[in-house]
Amino acid sequence: MRFRALMSVASCYTVAAGMPNMLCELVMGGMLVTSFLPVYLVRNNRGREASAEYASICSPSCSSLGVLSVLSFIFAGPIIWTQSAGASADFDFDLAVWFFRFFAFEVILYGVSSVVSGVLNAERDYFASNAAPMVNNIITIASFMLYSLVVKGGLLAWDQALIILAVGNPLGVVSQVLIQLPALRRHGVRLRLKIDLHDPALRETLAIGLPTLIVTFASYPTNAVQSSCALQVTSSGAAIAYYSRVWYVLPFSILAIPISVTMFTELSNYRVAERMDAYRRALSSGMRKIIFTMIPCALLLIVFAPVLVALLGGFDAEDAAMTATYLQVQAVALPLYALSTYLQKVCSSLMKMKIYAFAACVAAATQVVFCIVLTPVYGLYVVPLSSTFHFLAVDVVTLLSIRREVGSFGFSSVMLSGARALVFGFLGSAVGAGLLILLTTVVGPVGGSMLRGLMYAALAGLPALLVAYGSAYALGRSEAPFFDALFSRVSRALHRG
Image (cartoon, rainbow, N blue to C red; front, side):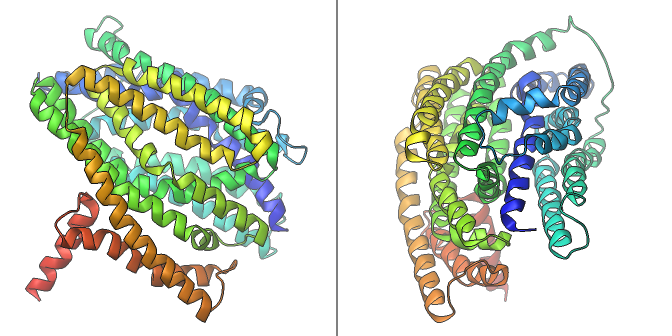
């Protein structure tokens, strides 16, 4: 099977795989994520039984997601059409529908995962809730690698091996739920089905969370337009976006989400206790940590994009170049994306999701117009570039609204932290770029070799990370929690030795 055909399969897979989470958020999931924790903490002040009862009251929402799963299976065709309208003739619409029928029942699983994660985060147990989506991603990526190996090894025909992809994706989501259940039991929280439509906490949850549905409704046409515009340029457009996103979300998932989740709990506690001075300090601290961590990551993604694409293996020269360029353009938005996710949790902790909903609507309109007007003129890379303008609009509008709500919170210190991050990020990227040039000159271009990509990533990437974050730590200027903890442990070990 030629890799061009594999890229076409990946496009169909990507369109189908993105829908379950989107549909879950469209109906209930996004509302649960944003409104569950603040209300749970209020109930938790009354005792464990009160908070557990509230979690049980929220669990019937998963029943509605179960119904949606069944409807998605039945109406798979029209749903996939919304994400692929205008696709080129090479796009296999029927294959995308086939995939989605396997993935449709993930809708209810994502809902269950949201409730369980909300409880764990409220209990300040972050390991399982943060590890769960990583396990999901690992299983999904492994299924794609297995599919490629099986087909290229001649063990199965490409169409026979599709079952590996069809089963691998829902298996990853099931694992995302199961990995969190032991932690839930450890905290003594027992969820049970309880319907009480008159409970004040449920009404409060809806009051906070309903604006989140506006955010989701705004994101739905945005995602549809991005997908359709990419597929309009090339039938591999969705696959290129998928492989780019594998690396784009990796630093976000590992480094930014733990910061957002931890700060969300602290901000919600300060808000419940009406400690607004502490709230403002925490708000600023979270922004500085996000910005300082993500800016060097974005610069390193730009430099190492060709190497990272080679690590995935199997690309021909044209696809590799397109995917690398797509990732480089998309990487510009990474700090803004991470900040927007954090600001969503800030608005939730304030119980003022209307702020973020308004910002999301403004940003969605900007991005849709940007893609529709400019993609036919300038091509594929308009799609990732539009994300920069989208998240910039979200961040600016949300920050202005938050400042009016809580007062000054030290935004100048956030900007100063961002400037420092740019300096250290440029230093690390310059070292990485120099080492890549040296390796290319001595050994040769990375090409499509996975082994050479791994070698280049280690020999050039690790020193680049060390310079970017290690020099900041050594000078006492770092605000990247993950790397600070890592270097601190190494330093203590060296001193003991």
